[in-house]
Image (cartoon, rainbow, N blue to C red; front, side, top):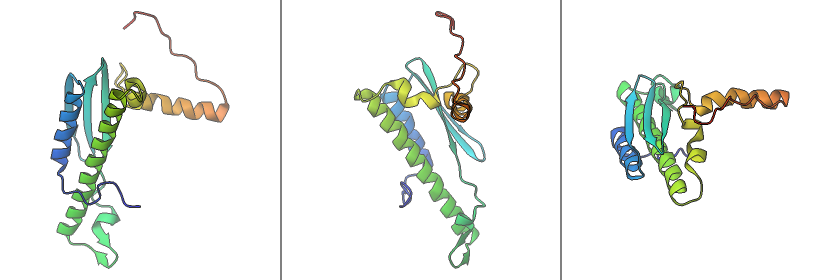
Length: 155
């Protein structure tokens, strides 16, 4: 099976702009994006929740970019392969966000369920980051994690 959008010619910048336009169209009140050497980040505020997606970028030095079946690629060819992989990831992120928003808009799902893992908690951690170790522990020990203290009206 081939990777989604593995032959796309749509630039990463255009995909990011499309993500921004889509979240705005579905009601986002804020949008941010940024990047570092190995990650890109897209965040938005919608329905009183902050949502963040961290997109891991492929390592330029991976063999899949630097080599092919006949040996090493030229530096230009390796860069072109890496850029293609980046474009593909951006298209996939666009697809995911658009599908989640449409599922909510169509009444198939609710916002918190679709974006749960990517909702930012007050300490800056994502719900998914917070819950993954607790889920693993619950499966290993068959014990439920302790409930978070909740005080109605507490912010």
